[in-house]
Image (cartoon, rainbow, N blue to C red; front, side, top):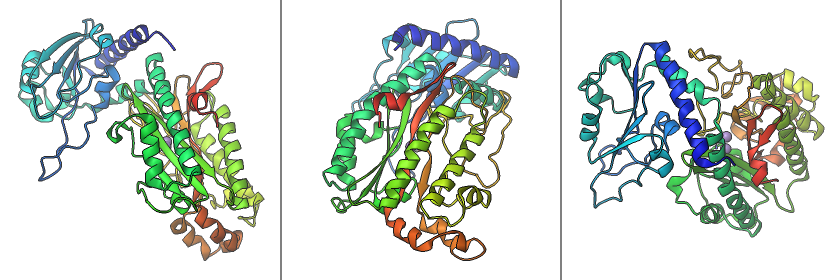
Length: 442
Ligand code: GLY
Ligand code: MN
Ligand code: MN
């Protein structure tokens, strides 16, 4: 790994350069980025777990709401940090040393004092954040509040990960890998979903709120619910299939990892499908190289799903014919992957230029989150899936495609749920770096 302070300094310098360019292109000469406002549930005094504004997190992993980052091209950036005097809740941790080296840091006790520190802002100041009410009273014009042209350019830059960001995602993966191992061991020992989830958290050493997304822990048929968040307490022991999609976060960056395991007694056709999906996932992780369209990679996943289902007799037609007739859709209803970074589903996957032009997903593939050509320093997931989802299969049981399926075999496989295998891939100049396999080889 790169020396952290040097990598962070380079990351901040890159933010300064790309932000200066984006401001110049969009008619601004100053940018204020707000770290976020706590979200309080309606008619309650309870807050949701705090997530910082991603644009703020891109500059600085500084905990807590109400901070303001003040960026003026050519000047050292300022961080106005709000440190409340609070005895109900523990105040956020101070800004780490490596951040303090790169910013002029001012500490204040209230959000109002932070705005006072910012001083007068004019029509050429842009603001990014959720604290919109305050902008008007501080001289920021409506066109300067979350301006689309500026946000598009900053999102575009987030496509290309710096060494600092890559190190953070690698560190998150290093934390998540032993937790995945612990979850697998719990499954093998016959634990129910809730205990597997607790085994994951215990090995990670984090509270649930620190996860980048809610764990998906599905045994047997629950593996077919793409974002299954239930945690049953009694069904361990007899389960033959275990799907876990769980991550970790470090310095505000996420990893996003899925594994599917089977136990002795699993349906042999399902076991063959799992084997085929593992091979396909490994192959696509190598084939996703600069110059290739991510959409084509996604289509390739559908073709291979078609071939696997044909080879195992689920389809009564060839894989190619099944693909051509759109019959793989109910089995793979999500996209092959997404950008990964500060957000688990990171920005700009469908944005094809810095100005913000959007390339929609191809017809019939509405869930595909990346429609771009692959480039160096992109970091995305490769997560093919193959599921037996009764709701999606139902329409095919009647009508012109009915005979293309062996329905008795489909019904036999529904209790096995499904398969997803997900790695996080950094696109390098000479080769890809599979961050996940470095820490979780199988
Ligand atoms: N964990 C959510 C996803 O894989 O997209
Ligand atoms: Mn994912
Ligand atoms: Mn995932």
